[in-house]
Image (cartoon, rainbow, N blue to C red; front, side, top):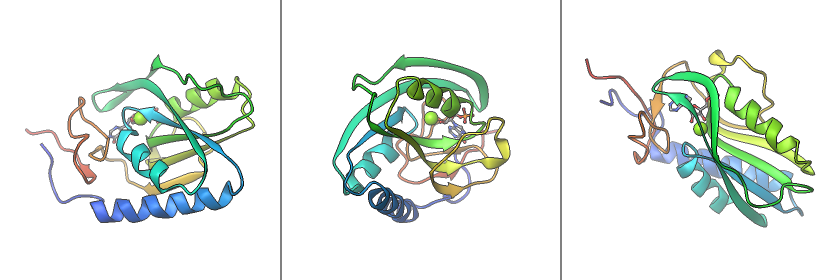
Length: 173
Ligand code: IMP
Ligand code: MG
């Protein structure tokens, strides 16, 4: 069950996506990027931000899972990896949220081993308090407190991804 009002409304998210895409477009001016969305959490954010980029963009995905209910398992399973060659590309990894940092750290190392020209990371949400691994994040939408959130691609047991806003999740008692 979702409780309380949205943490971020559809409009606030839209404004933030526009702002992030503007900064990315300026930083990469004159270059092409390979945008890689980390599924399934980044599904909605990825679809919105790539459409707001004013750059030539190629697109690929990573499908990975690390979460078990609301506690990070610290283990990563990779179910799909990019088909696009990484070598020599300006790669932008796009994720919904950075929490402990374990998943992004792992995925970052995997991409770096394939020798991209450059690698940057963009996340919509950052739960900094929970970080256990240091990961360089280049673009951050919102910093949030240590609460479990759903909506706009983020799930609880694969539900609520389709909410058009982000809300704090509380289990029904
Ligand atoms: P990390 O490895 O702990 O940084 O977290 C990896 C993944 O866990 C994120 O990319 C999300 O998909 C998921 N996750 C972390 N916190 C939340 C949350 O509050 N709601 C939904 N998913 C989350
Ligand atoms: Mg994720």
